[in-house]
Length: 394
Image (cartoon, rainbow, N blue to C red):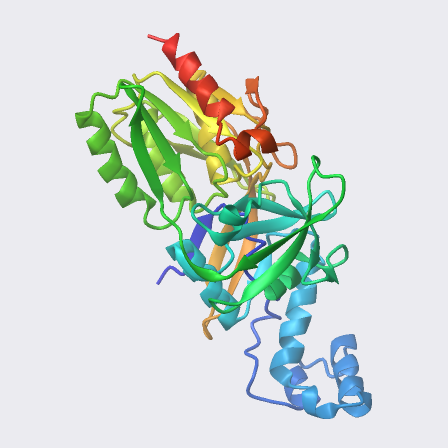
């Protein structure tokens, strides 16, 4: 049975980091140091020595368990690699992660990660309490319920931010336009993340919003695409703003609607001497003749960046908005025996022209910001520009 799944989600954010497994050892059935170490036959190892010392000397021995010790060691191993996307999920955290990809979980509805050493909002999810409260991509989280967030990891932040429906959390946010941090109190709700929506604007333009490349996107996009093909739409605005990514195969499927068959979607480059994988469009290319522009911003990450980069490289499609997040790696998630899982960065990805956007993001062809005043007045200059440019295209 294949337990792996490649995806490009930036969710260093919704789950709690825990680490990677030690040498295939199965945890949780023993509580003594010798038994933990026995499978390795290395009773004198630093790990086992340290464990024995904790058992012997820690002020509250009742808090020591083999399971927690192994989980903690695994966590440290993963974090020692310095890659925020290589993580181990304990069973409860794996459940949360799967819930997010399936489109439903309790929380405030934001993707967060560490960027430039700061706890940063990658994107508020569509229709979420965070979005309604005014949280924006690029916001820096300074405090969580009054606790300084400058020295905590994304996983620790998630522990503090997520909680039962109906409870609230206060985030102290710094934004470039703020003179000082501002508090946002948000009531947690059950978050239902739609895959996408589309609407007809200006009579002949289909605006397609993809909110994330989750497990339902293929079915939902196929349905929307058939509706668009039957509509008066002759041009497309592909809105990837605040789309944090998702499954790689969903991205490839969507690309197949916009690119001629066998066009390169993305190149995966591995670090162990393997030949690169070249993923190509395999769809029906029904939208390959449509004039298109793409909207991106700081919340556009991973799979949405791959799609935007492929369409620009292969078809010269213009990107409008702000620089994207810059998540240029591919992860593989492997389920383990006890319903825990491990997510490992297995490759770096490059656009069809060979460009890596890791840490750099995609630069828009037409740079245009949305200001706080625009939001207050419910204006969308990026969408307006997209419509203007499409109006000049045949």
